[in-house]
Length: 423
Image (tube, rainbow, N blue to C red; front, side, top):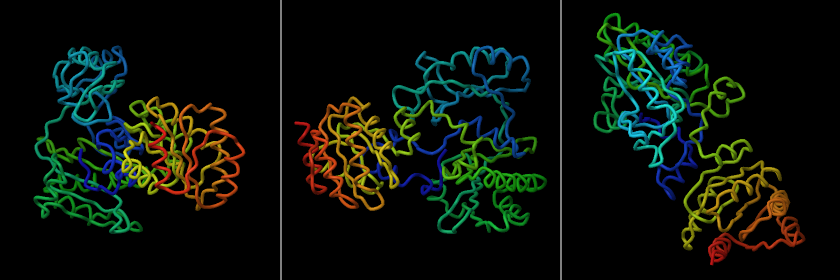
């Protein structure tokens, strides 16, 4: 589901996408919830969603077929990728989304999905293993709208965005029919009043009893937005059924990672099974890591320096193997784990350390490098460029270590030496 707010994506990862690697290969680093998890959060906030159950085994599916009675079922493979409906499983089963009115069809469909990899246009050729399947009540949609609440820098706070043109790419609507996009800035000290909610409901085209029902759903969605420290709650479609129900048919919720200490229950739902294990590992040590296709591992501090380092490596004929930012408050233990994670990539044939010590103490980096190299028994060339706080002490530490470190005094020299070390 397309998002109207591009700024909610990580700036560093946007740069990685734009400069180095295809967008499809860049993992999103924030908390991601499966569809059923988002629906559960909404359900807990009295927001109207389809009734649903979740199967993790064939026996679960049999129990659902026996106990969960609805007119029609929609069966959805739960993976963090779009295009499920047109996807194909590695066992030949077609479609990660199926409809049926017969309860006896549910177990075999679920069995065809569970434990098999689903390949969609967003998963890559290897696909993603399906571990859970959602079985929900299928509802007819008589009309679709779009609704979202997001943090907007321009307004210094939350903004509601809505359009009667729902169920499609909202960015396309914004480009071709800007008059069909309605915005309502929210005063955080006041919240969403009845007046604001009703105005948005009218703009979305709800009439009669549905106008009040939609307004009530909008207020509850705002309560969810606040309660879970969301940066975005996007409903597409926010629709109505032939029997006049107002329903949130699909949801995308983005969270403020800095609020994880307040949102323990929410962040415990984080599904890392589809993420690169090295990225998950790095996250445990507060390191920012993204794998790439090259052979020069890059360890830097700061997203801007990371991008510049990767650019200059490419300029001199090299290919970065990763984006690894140790941040400003790095300690020796984190440096050790950064090296450990880098060397787990068999494609890494050289490592380039490029540190500008402003907040970072170069001596801390140097000590971390020497300890890591001795512990890991580093077997690939290591080029180190340090500049800034305590740089002379750091160089002395590296010199006394007697490790085979290729020193560089400036940015470009470091990149040239890293590329040359491969030869």
